[in-house]
Image 1 (cartoon, helix red, strand yellow):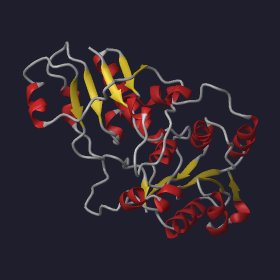
Image 2 (tube, rainbow, N blue to C red):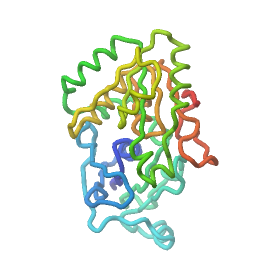
Image 3 (cartoon, rainbow, N blue to C red):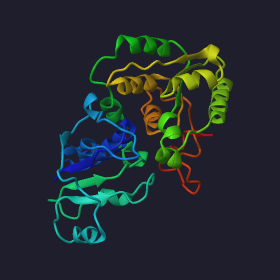
Length: 294
C-alpha cells in the first residue's frame, strides 16, 4: 500500500496536500508518493503555478499518471469499497472541512490510497507539526539578499504582513472566490499589533509591493521585502516569514503556512474572519482557535 497525494496549485496548496499525505503515510507506516501530473499542462482561468516541493526538505517520491487520475463518479466510489480497485480514490467532499473518514480509507490493505483535493485543515496533520516544521525548509541556504532581511527580522520585534493582490484583483475566478481582503483589514491588524507592542517593526511581503508602499500605514517602521527574480524566491520568503515573531496574514494559503510554521510559539497571529466570499462557511477547521480573527 502507498499513500498518493495529488499535487496542484501554488506552494501553499502543495503544502496542505503534502502535509495531509505525510501524516497519513506516517500513521499507516507506508510510503508516500506525490503525483505532479497537474503541472504537465496549462489551465484556463487558473493562476500559472510551478511544482515547488522539490526545493524543500520534504519526503516522498514524485510520480506522474498518464492519463491523469479523474475524480471518481458515484459508481466508482461505491465499487472501490467492495472490490480492491486500485487506486482507491478519496476525493475531498467539502473545502476547508476536516473529514474524519479519510483516516479509515482505503477499504482493502492492498489498495493504494489516492488523495484528491486541497485538504485545507490543520486537523489532518496537527499531530506531526514538529516534523513538518523541520521538513518544510529550504534545501539551499538563503541568498545573501534574504540573509540581510533575516538578520533584521531576528534583531527586532518583528511582524510579518502579507498582502496578496495580483490574481485576487485581476483574475476573475480568484476574485470571485477569494478577492483582496481590503485595506481596512491591514489598518486594523497593524493597529492591534502596535497596541500590544509599540516597538514592533513590520516586514511586508507582497505580490504587489508598489501598492503596499503607497497604501499601508506606518511606513516609518516598515521594511518592504523586495523579491528576487529566482525560481525559489517564494521558498526563501516563506522561510523569512516563519522567523517573524508575529503574523498578520492574508486570506492566502501561503501566509497561512508562514503563521502555522512560525518558529515563535508565543507570537500573535491575526487572520481574516472571512477567508472567502462565501459568508455561510465555518472556518474552525482551517483557522486554529489561538489565532485572532479580525
